Amino acid sequence: MQEAGINVPEGIICSTPDEVAAAAEKLKGDSGEVVVKSQILAGGRGLGTFANGFQGGVQEAASLASKMLGQQLVTKQSGAEGKPVDKVYVAEKFQLENEMYFAIALDRKTAGPMVIACSEGGTSIEDLAEKYPDMITRLPINIATGMSDADAATIVEGLKVKTDKAAAQEQVKRLYNLFASKDCTLLEVNPLAETATELVAADAKLNFDDNASFRQQDLFDMRDTAQEDPREV
Image 1 (cartoon, rainbow, N blue to C red):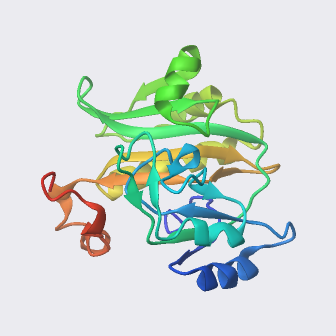
Image 2 (image 1 turned 90 degrees about the horizontal axis):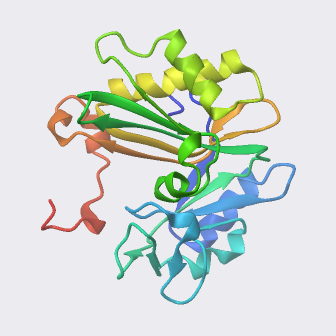
Image 3 (image 1 turned 180 degrees about the vertical axis):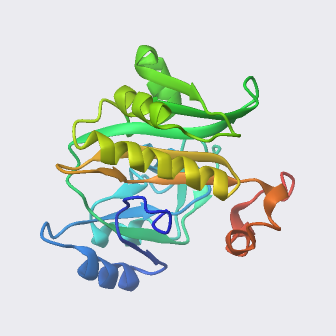
């Protein structure tokens, strides 16, 4: 996402509490705080529960990493047995003014990419669709022509962006270009958030088309099969 020109927090992947402490020291900034995110192959981490009773798969204190690493994190999307947390991602903490939801998925009905955007975010799209059905913008994108300026403006309007709208539209277009160029089947940014000055992809989940592995070899070389169900594979 950084390579695609999308605003994201700086972050460092860690496997031990000592690595977390060093990363936190490097990334803490003026606030003195960082965010520690469990790395599992499932969404809904922020509202997840660890098997040891510890709450929340995304935390704001490096000292809590020892309660996360080596534990099973159970979320709405992980199944009842949960997923093991072998690594955490330590990221700089932003002061977020607004949290929104943004995703691009492949839509069977329109046979192309579908943008799903909501001016409320930070929780799962299932919950958002239940609570705020009228606030969700759905916009199909023509795969042949890509995202137009008008498409981007419609999305930014639906997100109720308060900062620089032209810059926000450029971020949305870059997200679409990333989706298309990397053969994504899903690009989900939750939350897509605003600081006092700009739009930021504060957290994201991306899925890639297995059939495009020959085109995206650098991405597929990073695949970690440890948490995959061999029956699904």
